[in-house]
Length: 261
Figure: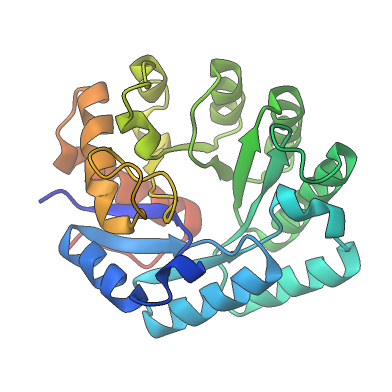
């Protein structure tokens, strides 16, 4: 059985309130060695920390401000809360970034919130978990800036374009692929082959983006095994090898206490 780390899962989402522990147990049984529970808001980070506390050494958590909520970002308040989360054990800052597709927050506020979280990541020596959509130019510029300051991170649920992949890889960042690569509309296996082995991750983004054949259902980390198999096929490597690679990469990026055993 191939093993893996789910590098991005919203386990604190209310979608899992009725069976969260069972979902985590199913992930263990399908090869997961760790789950990274995303805190995309201060409230979500608090819930994520509680989930991680129930499953030490298997569930880890992050803390940050999603671009959808950047209009409400208050640097003094929110950076203090993120800092406190890191002290409490958050292994990364995010989910943060830019989303110019939905534009739920004004773009200047999105950039402001992202820049502040980048600066905090540099100060605290934590990686960034980044969401980006329809914001290639600004994301490329900010990743280059992050790279110059030594900040590392991951572009989660990566679907392109190549320009963004190149900027991320040049900055020693990681690319994480989700169940999107199993969809019928997916045609860019060359993109999946772009990152070198030491810069690739896989994720569920659960409860969203369930892979085929579960598309349309609530996603869960156990199904990362399907995404892993599809990514391995595109890259021409055995799933077992790719799975071990994702464990090594996630452990390196997030400083996890994980072994493939």
